[in-house]
Structure formats: C-alpha cells, structure tokens
Image: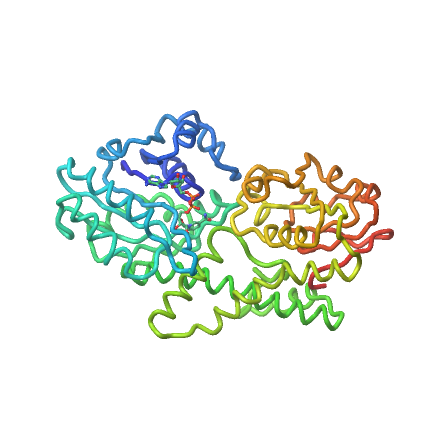
Length: 430
Ligand code: NAD
C-alpha cells in the first residue's frame, strides 16, 4: 500500500521506516530539509537503535522524504505525526497539527477518490472529530464519510527502543467509525499483527485518543508512586530496589517501571499528563492522583541536589553531570531531568562539566555556556562532586575514573554506579 506520514520526527521517521520494512511504499513529509535529505540519503536524522539500518535499506527507495505535500497525492492514507506540545499553562497546543491538516486538505483538493487521514499524534479527546476533521473537509472539499475518512491510531513506541516497540507492540489501536478507514488500517498493519502477538483494539475515535493519555498517565503515576515509596525507603534506610523487586512479583503490580530515581522526562509523560489534567479541569473535574504524580516528579531533582548539599558546599566548585538524555538509548533531552538538575547546580554557583554519549549537542540549546566533555573521565577530572542523571550502561563500568576527582562524592539519581571503597556514594532513593 502507498502511505504518507506528515512529520518526520521520532515517531514519523520510525513508523515510516517500519512501514517500508513491512513492504509498503512510504512518503515522509517534513518542513525540515535537513531531515528530508538525511532520510533520502539513507541516514537516520535522530539517534534511535535499529533506525539507521532500516533507512539504509529503504531510504530513497520504498521510503522517500519530501518537503512537498503534493508528493502525498499518490498515497491512499496519511498519518499526521506532528508535535502537540504544551502551552505555557500545560494545555495542549494543536496549532502545528491544525496547520498540517490544513495543508493536507488543500493538497487533497487535487486528488480524485478516497483518502484516509489518521491522527498519530497524541491529542485530547474530540480533537480529531471536532477540530481536525472539519479542517480537512473544508480545505479539501471532500465529504466526511464519503471520500474523506478520519481515524485515530495512537502510538505507544518509546524512544530508545522505538523500532523494536513498533515491530513488537502489545496492542494496536484503531479508532474510527469509518469502515474504509478501519479496513485501510487493517491492511497496512496486517503483516505486523500477523507476525506479532499484538491485540488489535477497534474502538471509537475519542476512545483511541483517551487510551493514549490513560496509558501515559498510568505509567507516569506508577513511576511517581515508586519514587514516593523510594523516598520513604530512603528515610528509613531501607533498600527501595529490594522492596520494588519483591512487590513486582505480584502480578497485579508487575515488575516494570519500578526503578525509583530522578523521575520521568522526555517529550510525552510530562506534556501528556499536564494536557489531560488541564483538559479534565476545564470540565470541572479535579484529577487529584495525576496532580500528585506531577508534584512528586517535579521535586525529585531538588531532592537529589539536597542530598548533594548534605555532603558538600558546591558553590564555585566543578561538578560533573553524567547523562543528559532523558533516558538511555536516545539523544532526546526534552524535559530531561538533567535540565532542572543543571539549573539547580547553576543556582548554587557551580561550574558544570557535562557528559553524555549522544545528547550533548541537543543540550547545548538549553545550556550553551556549560562545559561539555567527550568522555566521562574528562567531566570527572578535578570535580568536587558528580551527579548521575541518566543510566547509560557505560557509567556502570566507571571505576578508577573517579580517582581523578578533587573530592569523590557521587550522588546517583539512577542507581547505575556501584558503591565502592573510596567513594562517598549517595543514592537518591536507596
Ligand atoms: P518531533 O518533534 O520529534 O517531530 C515532529 C516533526 O514534525 C519534526 O521533524 C518537524 O520538522 C515536523 N513538522 C512540524 N511542522 C510540520 C508541518 N507543518 N508539516 C510537516 N512537518 C512538520 O515529534 P515526535 O516526538 O515524533 O512526536 C509527534 C507526536 O507523536 C506528538 O503528538 C507526540 O506526543 C506523539 N508521540 C511521541 C512519542 C515519542 O516517543 N516521541 C511516542 C508516542 C507518541
């Protein structure tokens, strides 16, 4: 099948490459020429394990990228994988996806026959039917339910394991009341759903929109709950990881997302939890649990810094920050917990020396003036303390590198460094 994906970011590039791998012809549309050139040259525009290999295989062949919306006229279905960021007040900003829907509609004016438009972005319930569908119908001149069909197909991939997640999903959700849209989605996903054990959920558009928020809100709350428990464990001198391992044996709890630490970051959990909280409050409902999940997450970085303060006055000292990405396996620093940690260090008058294997360039936009090093030992050399913000595997094997520190104080937000002689080690929740 011929399909198009508007937006070639973490989601758009990954799904287009995976669709090409499933045997489809995919067109990635993006406004960023560098991204488009990279895909056509068979190079991944983002750091994502497995993506480079898929682009090498399909880029410029069954997967092409373009800045020209007209190139999607040859396709049967378009996925809208555009950013849906937060506004200042936490509510969702749909201006980018609305603008893309308008351009898609204008473009479809030239197309005879049916077209299916699918919301891939995370959007608040009713956005697809009440905002995007009318824009598409007005600008394309097509009739909803006749030659224009809309659907919502939320995405559950995680950065760092995006390709693997897309290819081995737990579930695939199709939200639509259009038979044409559902049939088209079934056809596209058939090679994947046949090969995997994924459950296909067919539901309404609004339910599909809410499933994505419920998924993220639940996981974010699980992380905050284990962080709350971890903080209590720390106060009692209890090993929070032993506690987590034991409660994870209970099937009702499950073993995943029980690593207490610095909290969640990234482009989704914070933005999506805040967006659904804001939308709920607009209806008059106060989502107390979700408010609390955000509050716990917000205070973990300051807890880490207060543990540092307990050991050393860092004013005018060099402090190594190990890990800048919001999680290992990605170069994405959006809402990374390293950001409030570095802000807190700067408020304390610290000279920050930061290291991350892949995310330093992206962090430069937030902190152009701190020192970025090419290796962890360079950040540690002469430092009076070290804080760990991301659990990259390479930090687990650091050993004599700590010897080059001025004072060997390590405050670990991710339980990746082992306690050892000669190191003043403080774990955030253990
Ligand atoms: P992103 O910021 O990585 O990528 C968005 C892309 O859209 C960029 O390349 C940008 O140049 C392009 N773009 C912006 N305006 C455009 C326009 N008018 N026409 C064409 N291209 C345009 O975003 P992302 O992380 O891929 O997220 C996209 C959506 O998917 C969001 O709603 C997000 O919440 C959701 N989502 C993200 C993830 C994730 O892990 N990143 C997972 C699931 C769902």
